[in-house]
Length: 375
Image (cartoon, rainbow, N blue to C red; front, side, top):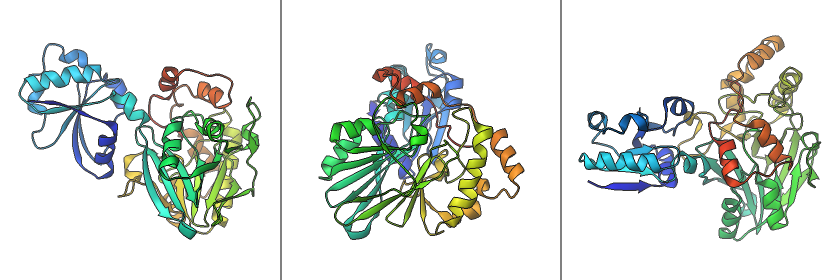
């Protein structure tokens, strides 16, 4: 039987196309329970690698014969060894190239829509981390919103599309992932925008992202308008793109709302969060399509792999938008905060420009699931 390498990109297609997959995850139980590869039609068996050193005979009957079997570990080595043992037992099997490390870093660009005058809007879905980045393209120009640290993904995509990156935005100072925004701006000569209320400690130059700022992309004049929307951070800013799309950053998600505590100010910022969700957003057109900066669960993905939903539908369905009492809202938010993201204080320091970890250190900082939302 054969052992075949499966790439993160191939796994991503199985997620997006709702294909079946059986995952034999050989990491320790706590690592698996904290964070695994999520798929609509995936089944799992978690047996730590050390429990398989004497052989895989006992687990062979648990492996299906009617779907692909993928062995997964942290960095690849253990999964390859287990896959070879499974193969020697007479079964075809795959192993994940680069392990969970590669899954965490993979980005899948998906077209959201055409825009006015021939423009396009793309969502970059980081399935392993729940991060969502965006690129607006129009007549040879591009703007990027909430880029993650894999800058070449964005610059290479712009080259493929034959567009020049002119503007780079971060909706807020991120705490759960390392931003690639200012590095893309430095590499391309683009303008880098950051909300000034989040940027008081940054050690680099930036252009203030102020409420009401309008940036036009391309000769067709696609507008990106900034809407101050604090609550996740004190500077959080949303965008309305082409009068059709509401990019909410980490304030509003499809299935939840943003957490206000990643600067240690939950009690102070929960009022701002309610003001944004219950007043500022209520004044917007309900036909706007919400595009958040993160997703939490695989069920938030649409059939085409995008994460997007009409604002009016969220007003009706999202529990975080339907808590009548301000006191109940405050308790719901502050009593249901998930664990802090891994190394979030260090990540904030990186995004302020105060520390510059190497690539391996950055990978370690980001390992684990997205934890930007109230549960």
